[in-house]
Structures are given as C-alpha cells and as structure tokens.
Image (cartoon, rainbow, N blue to C red):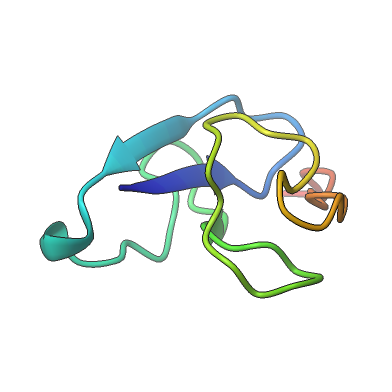
Length: 67
C-alpha cells in the first residue's frame, strides 16, 4: 500500500491506495503535489499522515498555500 499526503500545509488530505491502482500526482482537494515517498531516503511512506519517515526519520516537508 502507498500512503499519499498532500504537500500543502493548509490541506489535510491523505489517502491509502494499493500499488496496482497507479500513483496519483496531485491532491484532488487543492491541486498541490501529493507526497508518497520520503524526500530524504526515497522510500514509500508507510504511515498515513506521517510527519517523519519511519525508516530514516527524515521530515516530510510540506509547503504553505500561497494561491
């Protein structure tokens, strides 16, 4: 299973989906990029809504909505 987290700090969208369903790129609620892997170790996220990677402790970085 992949865990998707919206990269927008002001959006709380998260989703869990099987690998077979394909990887979505954008949040359906605000249009920002979806984060599905750790920016530090490049491994898929294991926990929905995580703030840190459970494998390397890398911070899952989001950005402020400036739209």
